[in-house]
Length: 113
Image (tube, rainbow, N blue to C red; front, side, top):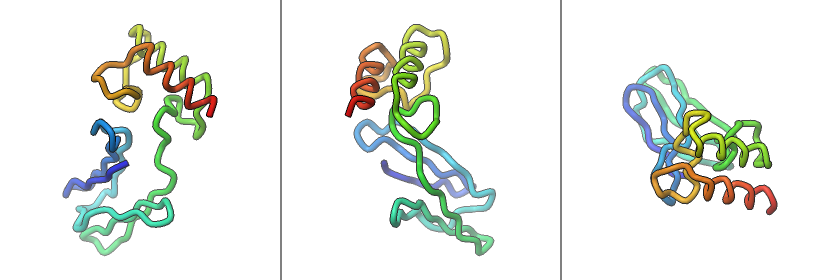
């Protein structure tokens, strides 16, 4: 994952393979530095003098946000593929610009590993 900060307080996590946004968070302050990662913790300083830390960014493919990749995530990807639920950027596992049954298959394979 690649992180970038917007000056007005928003942080973004981009998939390093295809560049889609898979995570975002905020500081409620102006960010005055670029984010850094140490021991799995995302750290950024703000103009108010506070240092913000974010731990455990989401797993790519964890579409129900429960912290693990399971068959339930593959089911969510299939629901996105048929339009039953809105697609999110993090569901496009093969970075082709669309959420399809192929993405659900990739999620399912990640579950088996």
